[in-house]
Length: 112
Image 1 (cartoon, rainbow, N blue to C red):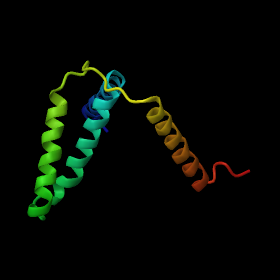
Image 2 (image 1 turned 90 degrees about the vertical axis):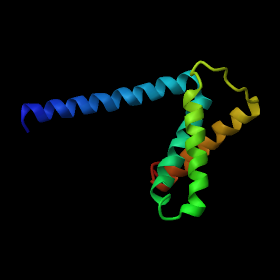
Image 3 (image 1 turned 120 degrees about the vertical axis):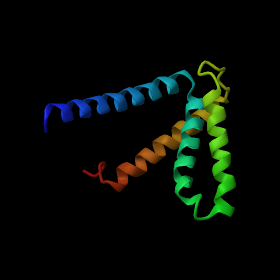
Image 4 (image 1 turned 90 degrees about the horizontal axis):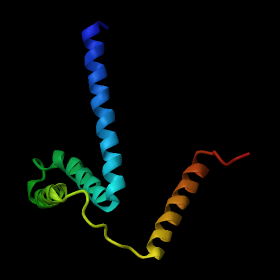
């Protein structure tokens, strides 16, 4: 690997790391906006390859995700957070720990 290739690789890695850091900062400022944006990006990415093959079925769903993603991106990050009840927060934490426990049991990390 010559000097130019290693320089290009380093620049690419730097861009990726900075993009990931920006995502964490955005999530920290407004978690609900970041979560919705991530769900829309996943929907667009998963449906994009199928738009050309299954045009009648997939096209409206893809357009919905694409439109919603653009709308969410246009909102300011400092937008007011939507409130949720404490019960919803506790439920989300319990679901996370339940999934974590299932993963640990499946991979045998809790076995003696």
